[in-house]
Every structure is written in structure tokens, then in C-alpha cells.
Length: 471
Ligand code: ATP
Image (cartoon, rainbow, N blue to C red; front, side, top):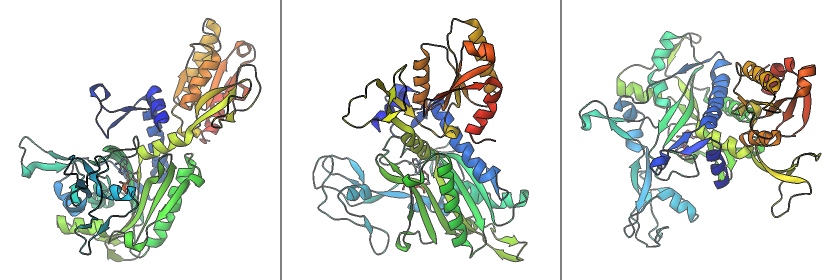
């Protein structure tokens, strides 16, 4: 992960937030390539969940909402992590993580209000056996709305985007042509004052969610839940995460929230362990009922097909953009032996402790699926001091960039330019050379195989579109 984080910084994917002031733990900034990567994730999700379906519509709700929203949702009372403090060194830890590290599980007391805490646990920092019992620590960031800072003006930065959807349920039903079953999708920032931000961007304090609330007729929960788990798994494969490193965790009944009838987490094998990318829960009518109770407004829906009135149930696939971006980076990262100039051969995987094969050198490459690569193609004139080559390369570059993020580079040896693009995951390099001026063909160099073929200039847009699965 350190090597990957260093690459991310060096090549402009991800920087530590507020770095010039020493950083701020749990906050990250995405650079020129990182923001393209996230844009690809968001757009692919939106296409698959909203645009290419006729039963889901979009929404973009405010980050700060009426504080009652968070009372109704249960976040004010119970969106908390159990914390223990060390009385000796004054450090603070998450109780469940602390027990997990010594192979135990944090259990609730039978009344569900407290925790069972073994009293012989040592502080992982100073070793003292002086830990307090676990206490809840609310993860919502508090702020004030308006000029007066008192309890009446307290508001929260949203810890999830979902509630913006529930509170707009009636607005959407009455202003668009949706009928149950239908969904409302939203992408946006969420904020949690995580106690232990860690594993690079995996657990951050500011992050982005892509959430869908899919409203259904009561009683159809199990089938729709199954459907969405399958849909979402297919989507992960479509963006380049192989099925063998994706896993599903089906919650056993005793781990489900009291209102939920099913929950599946989609997990990915990160270098630091198998961890959650997305949770897909069948939440019954819990959320709409709670807002009905707290707001005094009716959330009852009249179903024109069945002539029934009911509060719809909901299936919620909830994913994190930053975690998916991190999974894509982990999946794409490779160090390989590749033939030096003039040597024929395919890239070979690096075996630990083995020296370079004769005539090979090391390269770092990000093997993104082309649809997720930040830059889709790089265009190079073979030599920068030949105006005819430069003019032709720029003409091709200007044409392609109307449709895709494309990069133009004329600096340095051509091999070095290819290698720089390998390191940021650009799937194809297009080189204009002297033959181009004669027969209107260019070199098309594939990132993964490093094979070069000649392609006519006219063919380039169609070939790139095919590579991206856009045709
Ligand atoms: P975890 O158990 O890892 O804290 P969670 O189960 O609380 O996550 P949800 O509330 O289900 O997470 O949020 C849905 C999705 O939002 C998660 O699957 C994840 O992708 C993303 N997410 C949640 N918390 C964070 C965070 N602190 N940093 C980055 N992404 C997050």
C-alpha cells in the first residue's frame, strides 16, 4: 500500500488533504488523474443504475438537512462507535477493533444498551491495563446554521446520502412519472468523524457515496434484494474487478438490524484484507415510516396497479466511490519485466528475489480496464523537431479529445513516453512517424501486451470506441 500511495502522489492521483499544513488525518485530495478516475466510476454507476433503466430517477439533495432528519433516521441516538480510553496514556481506541486484534468480538449486553467488556485488555499503545469501559462516540460532524451558535442552530453534515432520498420520496412521486417498483439514485459527499481513519483512503472522514433506494411492494423484498445483489456484482466485474477477488457476505439473522430482512456486503480482496465496497440491505418500510412519524406527513403510496395503499419497502445498494477507486488502483497495479528496446518478447511477472531476465527491465503499469482509465489514449509525434510530425500528431490529438480525455506528449525518447503512460494506465499510445506522412497510418501501441500495429488515422475513433465498449 505504501508503494501504491507513493505512486498515487507522484503521478497526481491522490494527495494528503491540506498537505502544505502537515495534512489533516482522514481527508484526501484527488489530483488531475484521480478526479478522472472517480468521474469514470460515478458515470459508469449512473449509466448502469439510472440512464440505462426506465425505473430509476436521479436526485441531488442538500448536504445539510433539518436536524430532525437525523433524529428520525436514528443517527442522533445510535450512529456511534464504542470507544475506550486509556487512563494511563490518554489515547482513545475503537473497542470493537481493539478486541478484533486479539481475536475476540465485542458483544452487546442483553438490554442492547451497553457492551460486555473483558477487564484484562491491555492498551495497545502503552500496555497499561487501564482502559475505561466502552462509551458511544457519535460519528456525525456538528455545525451551526446561521449567526447564533447554540443548541437551537445545531445541524449535521450528512453521514450518508440516503436520507435526502427518503425525505424527497413524495416530491419525486408527485413530480415525475414513477410507479412502484422504482428507484431514486444519488451521488454525493458524506462525512463521518471516524475514530481511526486508516488504510489510505479506505476509511476517510469525508468520502463520496453512490446510493440507490429502490422502492417496492411489501412482500417482494427477497426477490428484489437478490436481483440487486446480482446487478451490482455484474457492475463490479464490468469496471474491471475480477469475480475471484469479489466476495459476498450474507448477514446471518442475528447480525441484521431489527428492521432489515436481508443484507449482503460486497467485499474486495484489498492488500490489507477482505473489506467492504458496498452494502445492499432490504430495509423494509423503516425509513419512510420513521419520517412519517417524525414529520407528521403521510408517506403512504397508492398503487394504481394493485389499487392498494401501503408504505413502500426499500432495497438499498450503498457504495463508496473512494473505496471503489482504491480497489481499482490496487487491482491495476503491477510491476513487470519488459523487454528493453530492440528485444522481442511479452511482459513477464516479477518473481520475488529473482533478478531481471536477460534483456529485460522493470516497469510499473496500471492495468485499468480501458473504460476506467483516466486518460484513454496518448498521442506522440516520433520527433519533436520535425514540424510535419508535430502538426499531424496535434491534428489527431485535437480530433480525439472532442470525445475522450486524451494526452499529447512530445518530450523525450518515445520509449520513455510509453513508460510514463503505462504508469498512469493509459491503454493505448498512438505514434505519428514518417510513414504516417506517406500512407496515413500510425503506430497503435497496446499498454498490456506492448504490441505495436499500424492503424489508419481514419480508423482511430472507431478503434478507441470499441476498446472502451462504446459501440
Ligand atoms: P464500515 O463498516 O466499513 O464503516 P459501513 O458499513 O458503516 O462501513 P455504510 O454505512 O453501509 O458503511 O456505507 C455504505 C458505503 O459507504 C460503504 O460500503 C463504503 O463504501 C462507504 N463508506 C462508508 N464509510 C466510509 C468511510 N469512512 N470512508 C470511505 N468510504 C466509506
